[in-house]
Amino acid sequence: MSWLIKFYPDLSCFEGIDGINNTKIRHRLKKLFYNDSYRVYPYEKPQERSLYKYWKNRRTIFKLIDEGDIFLTDELWFSVTPENLAQFTASYIRHCLPHAKYVVDVFCGGGGNVIQFARLFDKVYGVDSNIDHLYCTYKNAQCYEVTDKVNLIYGDWEAVLNKTLKNKINQKQDCIFASPPWGGVNYLKQDTYDLEKHLEPVSLSKLLVLLFKLCDNVVLFLPRNSNLDQLSAITEELLGPGEKCKVVYVKDNGYMKGILVFWGRPFYDFSDQYPEGNDNAPKLEQERDINIRMEDLY
Ligand code: MGP
Image (cartoon, rainbow, N blue to C red):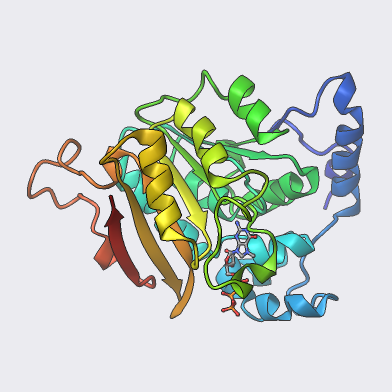
C-alpha cells in the first residue's frame, strides 16, 4: 500500500461523513484506512470460535477471499450474503427490471450484495449506520474493482432514504434491496422466526411502509424460518387485498441459506417487459448452483 493512500485515502465514494456533526466519523474512517483494519488473512482462523464455520466456508462468502484483500468485522463474517446468492439476486432483479438504473442496498454490511449489483446496474447506493461496515464494503468493492459504480452513504436508514435518496430513485423502475440484521446467529433457535418481533432495527411492517413509499420494487433477504403467514398478512395490509409477494428459497452448495422476498409486479408478471417467447425472460429454475423452490403468496 503506498503511503499516500494510507495517509490520504480517497473518500469520494462516501457521503454523509462531511459536516461539523460528523467530524468524528470522518476521523474514524481515516483511522480504519490508516490501520488497514479488518483485513482477512485467509489462512488465519478468526479469534472468535463461533466464527470458525463461516471461516471454513469463506470461499463461498467471497470467491476472491484467498487473494487477501477482503475485509470483515466479526458481525460481517456471519451476515454477509454469500457470493453465489448475491449474484443470483442481482441477475434476477436485472432480468425483471431491464430499465432500472439504480439499486439501493439499505443495510449494506460488508458489500456482498453491493458488489454484484454494481456489476449489473449503473449505480448502487449502499447505506449503513455503521462506518466500520461501510469501510469494509468500500474495501471489498475495491477488491472486485467496482468502486466507480458504488456510492456509500453513512447514516440512519430512515433519514438517508427520506432525505438523500428520495429524489434519486425512480419509483416504478428502480429497486430497493435490504438484508437487515436478523438479531445474530441464534435466529434458528426458534422454529418460526417472528418478523415483527426479531428483525432489526425495526419490524418488517415498519420497514416496508417506508420502502414502499419510495419504490414499488422491493426485495428483502430474510431468515429461512421466517413466518410466511406474517409475510402474507403484512403484504395485504400494506398493499391491499389480493396483492402478492414472491418468496424464493435459496440454497447455496446444497444448504438452505434464507429466503428472498420480492414485492412489485415485474417480479412475477413478465408480460410487460418480455412479450411471449422472449428467451431473455427470467427463468428461475435454470440458475446454476442455486436450487430454488418458489411460491406465490396471496
Ligand atoms: P447461518 O444460518 O448463520 O449459517 O447463516 P449456515 O452457514 O446456514 O450454518 P447452519 O449451521 O445454520 O446451517 C447463513 C447465511 O444467512 C449467512 O451467510 C448470511 O448470508 C445470512 N445471515 C445470517 N445471519 C445471522 C444474518 C443476519 O443477522 N443478517 C443478515 N442480513 N443475514 C444473515
